[in-house]
Image (cartoon, rainbow, N blue to C red; front, side):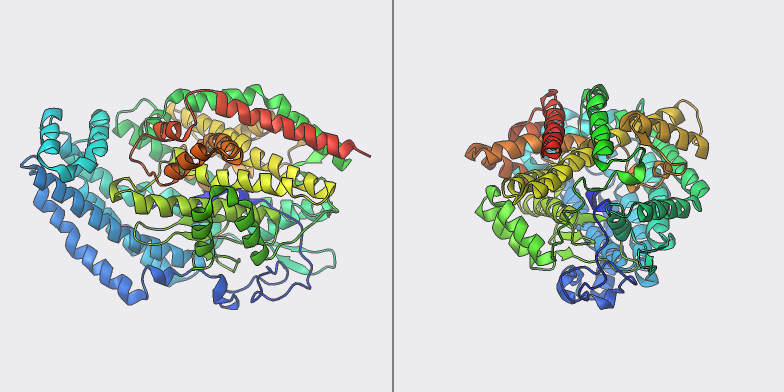
Length: 630
């Protein structure tokens, strides 16, 4: 039930003029009061009713799940009786998980339409509580499988051919045998599920329900209620004073929660350490990587390679300072386009057309499925008050994918749409190709499909740029994309490692330690040309991704893999495209490093990371050349 959130959706373009059409149009209105949900035309809303037509249907499945999950007890202590007993138990688990997922995703999609709605807060709370009971009932299964020796499992696999599709799953269980607890201990871990998930839930409530971003005055003295979408527009605007005021407003707003955020983040790290120790791992990083058999060298080599190339990143900051003509470059200057007079606004219809043209190299079938998703209630397009921030793709095994957007009319959000639909189609294909047990994706491969879409779209737009100014704008976006999805995610990964190691070594995560650690890391990455304001280290505590243990590094590794794959596809290599489409239809029926190897990328080698760093340097040099032309 993983949601794939996009960081690209958090930082985008300039304030749109007050004369824009109403929200019934497909052009976003980023001025005045924040629209309410009912103000938005149904054309631009996702169809959550495709999961359940109404609450009564949800309630019926809720009751069914309540009545069925105790049946798991019939298999407890009997998995070794016969291969039929084992497969029947596995199949019942899948049925329970399918219902749970539908209930869970429906409740939280409805909640993200407007996080203020207590009705959906209650639904989410109810299914979360029932999910914990389901997990508790299922908790015996994997520990009991591990009481069966390898010879008996092999015998079962030969006796019942229906069990064959579970071979990889069963062998992976044996691989991690020493980290699976006794049935009683696994039941306790399952019962603790709601408590272990509390830090993320608390952060989401602060971020999406309680926290108000603030209000600023525009150039005409009119109040503008800030949202994350509007804030990101301002931060790419040409009004530097407005950027400073908006930045200070946002940071001051977060400071109201500073002690709560620090305590909550510290609780999340402690939760990670508890699970690490309970499962007998040496570190949380080791535990996280072991879930998908990722070599530790992949993580550490990523951080080392980026650190070795920070002078190239510092060159980009120095160039930005020079072109903007500022004596001092502040953090609120980092999103400003280097050709501010070139501003282009896109309607949602135009954004869809760009995707359908730019992604043609992925083939006719991909384009047909993409167009279907765009026009069939997969996407929730515009921002409204109380709606979840940013962007993500989600769904269930039996539903079509869902994409949350807060479309603001910028090129950044066109790329975000491409990104999230990359996730959506990846899930769509794997759900229909893989059995339930393997339909999901590891976090290591999850971002490949999304960032591959962005890379292909970027090459299309650069090739069709109508002016030097447009090309500079696109190069600026491409550089920022590599920055945000690759370099910054590596920095976040290094920060996460520092926090976990500090706690594991007996340290405490005080507000001062968290801010100091983050500020020093920011300065190391950004270099000497950036001045970090007194409160611009609040990012240390207010990012959703910190609550998904060692998740952000996969943005960086996935991005490097996507760059290699997209280049092969754009070169017209049909074998590469066929391998990529096979990759999209593969869930988790192999280890992720092996899946990428089949697609043509060796993540055990330094080549993907080195090629992306080389590309970054080439783009900065090209940007410098174009900007210095007369």
